[in-house]
Length: 105
Image 1 (cartoon, rainbow, N blue to C red):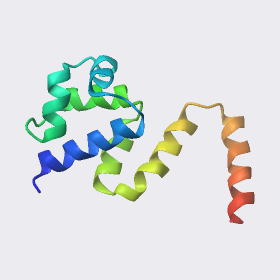
Image 2: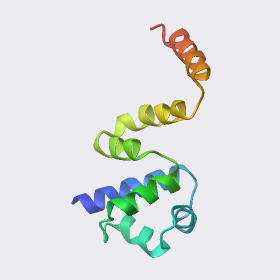
Image 3: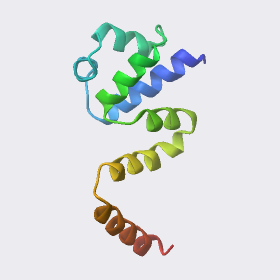
């Protein structure tokens, strides 16, 4: 499978995981719905600017978007890091304590 199709499937999976339609993602990302359709089908290789818009529409960082694409298992860990980046330090410290308690690390 070529990279454009693989990336398109990845974007579709992220969109569907969030319960978004192609139209909703297009609106949130500020791109044409036809562009979302063509990207998901692998018929369009998006520019970096368009990828950044898609990431914003999916509410993920570019780091998470590309990391999850390259190493699918890492997406969830990257997404958790994105969530922590938006929180005050005291919340991050509290979350770490909970994670350590759960995992025994």
